[in-house]
Length: 121
Image 1 (cartoon, rainbow, N blue to C red):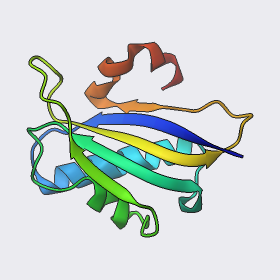
Image 2 (cartoon, one colour; image 1 turned 60 degrees about the vertical axis):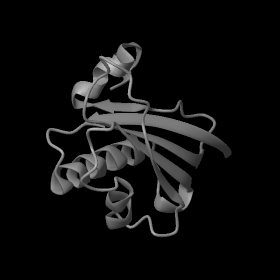
Image 3 (cartoon, one colour; image 1 turned 90 degrees about the vertical axis):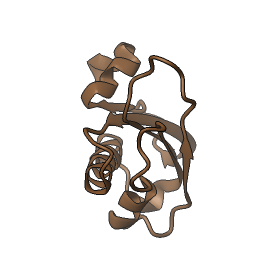
Image 4 (cartoon, rainbow, N blue to C red; image 1 turned 90 degrees about the horizontal axis):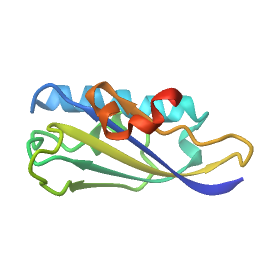
């Protein structure tokens, strides 16, 4: 096993606490399921959100999923003109199997951020 990093992103329909939490849970679950991860495999998670999402911290969703022992951090994405709106991004540091290729996860409209990974979605 070695330390690796996994990326993911998802779009949110509204700047609403419930929507932010539901979509973040969907993203975290998908990253963990596709990579065969358990909470004990996670070292840390960094969440970023675009400036139009400020109704709730995405890390709250990870806590609701039971990631109580994992260090979590929320930050704001750079506000680039013309960028995709209402996006939550995730960077997970975890222990993983060297034999299994990492499965980065881009959901909903966020698939447009990494079209090169669409075959792996």
